Image (cartoon, rainbow, N blue to C red):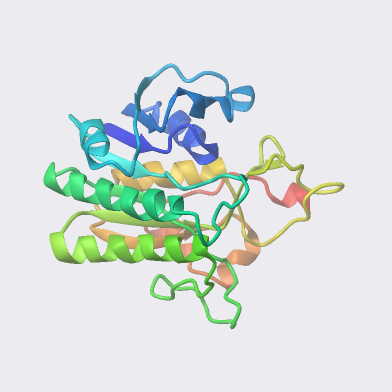
Length: 254
């Protein structure tokens, strides 16, 4: 199928592109050619079809979906710039919320589906509640609120329009092959200490592909690669319903 990946040049996006390339036609969407600089030294060049635009602009999103069969939505406001996610930063609302609304609405208008949305959630609930698909993340930072609202938007679109949507809930995304985390920190001894919420980005990419190929109408799955995660969140459902086999060796970093 023809899949459009929004946020394709990012940390997770590069792994998703590599996974999709094996079986599907791909169009990679990001804000500008400069987006590819972020991980070129790690992932090299990606030579497939590319499209650029502002995800908060509906026309750019709609044009990117021309001829598509399915969508993987990874785009998120991610920056370490001063003031990011502060009280005066409008970009989380424009990118995380307006951007996702544009994707969902345009996909619905074009009868494209499924839409696989990569959200975010903790692995361990601060109140000790087991994280089923129905239990929402409780934290209230601007990032957390926009990610929670993204998930609610997906639920609402599915219930209101019938659009097929699968939401994936990773926690902290690392690369077990390279031994580094999202911020390029080393994992394990002398680096970032092992934590329950890790998932290898290649396992998350595999989950995106399996969700894309599934017949699921709507569902929410925790995607976490640690052994401990099954005791605190519904990660087992990603194995049973998506058929995901976690391959990332996270135990090496204990």
